[in-house]
Image 1 (cartoon, rainbow, N blue to C red):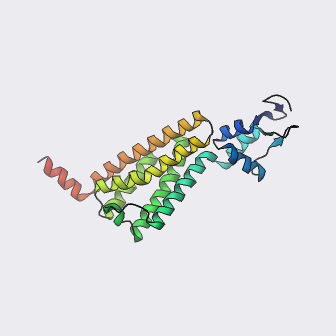
Image 2: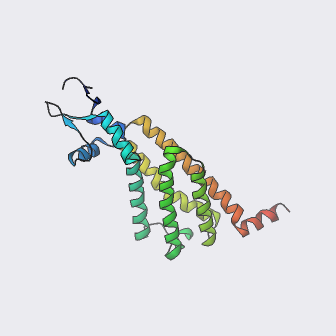
Image 3: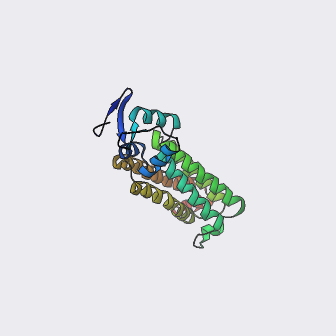
Length: 216
């Protein structure tokens, strides 16, 4: 092969860096996948790795979510599991309630949030953050948490999600695509916060009583 971008019978060949940018992953990750046979690649006469664009597009369609987004979700889930298992959180009123069935319920909603986020990045369905925010509000009221503690807990764990996004950007990939993903994450995060507050104020009996007395 000669030149940077060659053609083969099914389309364009891409370098390792170009293919990694297309998938939204670090070149080292793509190299490991190719070595393991997860993604097809070829070698030039000089030993350089090349990927067929059409084969990468087919791989993306077959595997659903973008690999880079899947890495983000996996990393965030791992951090949440470690924190909940080890209790490695500065002691605060909201965290003191995170045990037993309450902790399990919030953990399940965290997983649901990440699953909804993954789909939201693709379809921008506004009902996804609304569902999650309302669910968090229901759980917080059942656990006797104040709205302030609910927001502190969400922002604490949400920090891992934003940190994961920054890590993915730092690791490489297409800056344009990761900018788009980051904007989607922030939109989802903000809409979830708003739905959480609205749901809490609508559902909490003491919040309604306070609001009623303030307008009397």
